[in-house]
Image 1: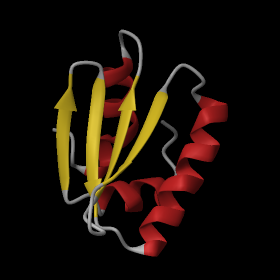
Image 2: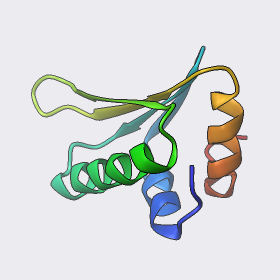
Image 3: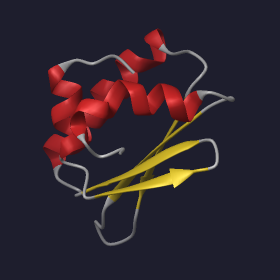
Length: 90
């Protein structure tokens, strides 16, 4: 994950972070501007990190959005390193 300030701002807005066996899940509110920012991040990161899988989950009744970022061995360390400045992943 690149360390653009706009990316870090987005991840600072995550309401919850869950560690997965092969990555992390980030919960965001269902605001339109957050959805647009998440989609923009995915679009750019797919070029920079082609081994990562991005899953965007929309919960019922306009509930929160979940962004799952997964990948092969080493993915969690890669994500943690890239987002360490956001202080979500200690």
